[in-house]
Image 1: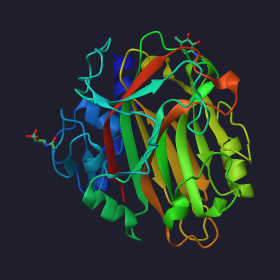
Image 2: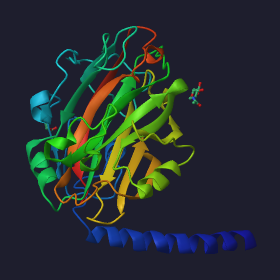
Image 3: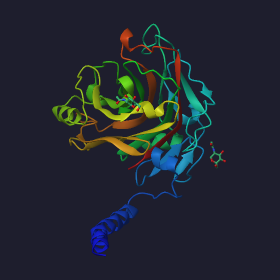
Image 4: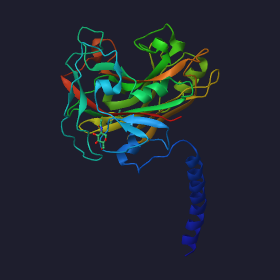
Amino acid sequence: MQLQRTFALLLLPLFVVCLVTKDKRADTHIERAVAPSVLGTQLIPVASFEYGFTTATSFLTSPLTNISLSDSALGVTRAQSNLPRPIVTPPSASSSSPPPPKSAYQATYPEGSINPGSDTPGGFGFYLSGEKSFTTRLAQSGTKEVLMSYRLMFQKGWEWQKGGKLPGVFGGEGDLAFGCSGGRQQGRCQCFNIRVMWRANGEGEIYTYLPLTDGNDAVLTSIPPRSIRNTDYGYSVGRGSFNLSSAVGKWVTIAVRVRLNSIGKKDGEMQLWVDGTSAINAKGLVIRGNNGATSRVKGSHFQTFFGGCSEDWASPQDQKAWFSDISGVIVE
Ligand SMILES: *[C@@H]1O[C@H](CO)[C@@H](O)[C@H](O)[C@H]1NC(C)=O
Ligand SMILES: *[C@@H]1O[C@H](CO)[C@@H](O)[C@H](O)[C@H]1NC(C)=O
């Protein structure tokens, strides 16, 4: 009896906090129009958002627009033409919850393949700005915070080697937003590129090209469990904060949120969720450097390959991965 009462007293403040938080949220942005499904909360792991699109067929309506999984509907540009990315029916997954997608972009990584510029390229790469109204909203100066997400499955028997790239978010000033990778040094304050990477044994991280400021260095290198500075190439952030082994033979949801900093302030954010669980959350960042007033989130850099740029990164066998349920929301 005594124990029960103590327990109830302990729970009471929690309950009150929940009520208050919920009320606050109701005042901001548009609420979900329908009860979210498990897949919905994985693809869009934020409490509310203003607008969005998804190619997922199994959930949600307004304020999400559903579009087909196709280059034209997704606003695909600058695709690497030497790398095939057919839309296929993916092989069956070893888990059917949430329901697997019915179609997916297929990436092929031939044995010995590394990055797209090498003699033996693998994977694929393109940029997408999403459904038309979404693209329009991305370009507006008031758009501060954007989340892009997708589902991914590696083939059964997948081999990691040293690491490889996975899609993420990109942006910057005009066309300087493109090509913010591959060791680029010019215009590093005018672009940002936040992709996901797998490393040996499936260790996950965010691989970032952000303006090279002391403040960003301090934030990025402090993200647990470990982060590695690399001022020539990208910073490895939060290496080991998730394990992509869960995506071998099964669909896993990756969501990346970016909040642009106010001009001249260090208040930008980047966050990553895996299956709806936050794995990395970095605050106090400068995502758009210098003046940066025209810098915007541009969409998703939908790129994947093994590497790295030397042969020790190469795919050890012919292997495949699938990408689907591509989504994006304007959070604010
Ligand atoms: C959008 O969803 C509706 C209702 O489920 C469906 O009938 C329609 O085909 C979908 N459109 C696209 C482009 O997937
Ligand atoms: C990830 O999980 C798999 C399966 O449990 C395990 O074999 C592997 O060592 C893990 N990777 C890391 C880096 O801990």
